[in-house]
Amino acid sequence: MKVLFCIRKDWRTAPGGDVIQMLGTKEAMEKQFDIKIYVEGNPFMVANYNNVSIVHVFNIQNIDVTLSFIESAKAIGKKVILSPIFWNLSHACFVNTLALIGIFDLSPKFYFCERLHRNFAQVFSEIGTRFYYFSAAYKYKVRKALNLVDMLLPNSIEEKRIIEHTFDMKVKKCRIVLNAVDKRVFNHKSHRQSCENSKKEVICVARIEPVKNQISIIRALEDLKDIKVILVGRPKEEDRYYYESLLWIARERGNVEIIENHLDHQALSELYRKANVHVLPSFRESPGLSTLEALCCGLNVVISDREFLPVDTYFKDLLDKHVFMCNPYDPSSIRKAVLMALESPPPKDLISDYIADWEMTARETYKAYLEVLEEAFEGC
Image (tube, rainbow, N blue to C red; front, side):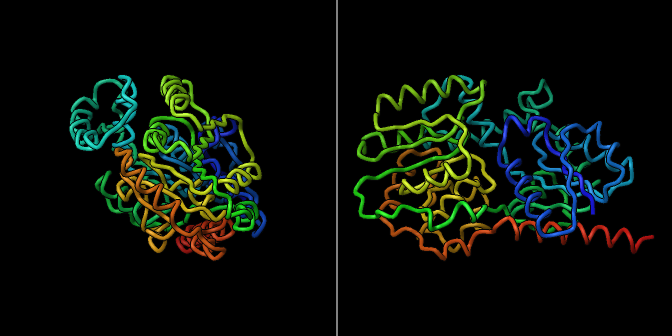
């Protein structure tokens, strides 16, 4: 079988969760099955892959590109699979708007302002591109894409429900395919050996930007200066002011290390090994690959609550044991969750049983391919 993976054109230079998911799936599928996978970032090149059986598109964030991939594939008579990697972006849009006007320090009151921002954005969504996510045009294009594909592969039950709610439609054919971790690298054996070490370290592995909320981590632990904060990530150019504010707040607090260099998985595993807790109080995750990696490495983790990521699909059995939820708008909530995570026993080796590996993800994806191809055969 030959398959074409389609993804945004900057996937090589700006890797993110969608790229990790795509490459992890590709490696595992080619290893387990008689399958050849190509990767393409240009919708206009899809017509050159007439020899493939399946076109698999990743990510609907940039719906114009996604729809172009799907329409190009359908134009040459191909079956199309879509991994949407979607979550409600309303909170993310709100904190980005706050950042535009220089508001980086958040508090619980902003949570109640988000709905007002959402209503405002919907009113002005048809004017310009600032609030395009809320526009009727955006929703029309997403619905069109979803109706064209042969199967949807959401990575959680919650993602499927949010898609149906946001775009006011019923997803007819889908298979849940979980996000995964490379357990050859991220595993319990790599966790710190010296648990008696009295030093406390919390780590956050994520791009430095308002949505990932690193400033609130420092604010939450502002007076607990014995706890070292390690931030691993780099900002995009448009988030430069956020990054400069983060640097100033980090210097003021002290005992904060920021690592901007690109790190491979082995180096990341070593950093997890030295830490006690991973903290990601993000305004939008699905579910956060670094959180899964940290859990596999034997760390307790702090995540945002159910409004911001698919908590139940990934963490339901681990809540208040090794996974601690917080309100990302509230530094005091983040602080409480971090302290609970620090005081709780770290997860043992069996924690990895709760987290998928890429081999499992590849098997579920392959089953989806067979389903749509058998349906095509039966229809002949």
